[in-house]
Length: 370
Image (cartoon, rainbow, N blue to C red; front, side, top):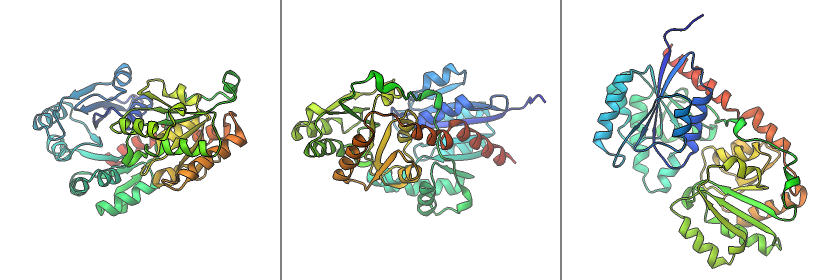
């Protein structure tokens, strides 16, 4: 059977130099059924870090410049682009206020929001009013709200006062081909030094990066001296963390690698990933690490607790419990050394494949269209 009329989907995202949501969009693009779906990607302000990859796949990728999140010209240009495309479904991923009404005005079509967990972030940033505006927009303009975890679903339903039937959970997935597992990797490494890692934004209020120097200090207090903690990423609190590192005297154990394009390879050379977040709707990097055979020590909060509580290769620690993080790291190191985790890899393969995530999203699009 030849399908001549494809379902047209517009994916809209406020451009960030971060990568989590962008990785999801890249994987959706990679695994989407292009015989059925015709997708375009609209990024506001700037292209995301995976713009080039999505373009190479052959998708139209439209960047609409904006001075800030309240730029009127950006909204006018978006409306024009959407009218030209005439999508059947619009999927929105994290945008400023008053974008959803513009989408509704310009297209009059089905609108779905993928909420990646902004509620607690807005609260911690001192901008709870953003949640109030979003509540109105969700109720008036969005037929469905997709969330990445059951914990986030409960928070969205409670905060925005939505009927549970309007909220649907699609756990995130990763492109397993991007995160290779090699159980022989230990043969090429220095077997004496523990390599710890942190991957993500250097941002204290939600990612808990100010805990990293304290965890390093605690490990030294426990007489673990031969270790290195690689901090991979950048963010507004980097200088603050660098100052803490010097103040605590742990310069010899912490290395700032900055933004990197080879994160999958770096993860394969980390023994234990530390995820000290204070809030996390999902925790994609923990799944990526497990896929490479790296064990994980993470805060027992929200999405992290949900996705890791059944994983035999992840230790969950109360949020901000610095001694707990250090003790868990030491225990894993003494028990496993540099042995890679095949159980962690299998755990991800069974639960968090990007192909499953993409299929579920496409099924929701079909159901929305009736």
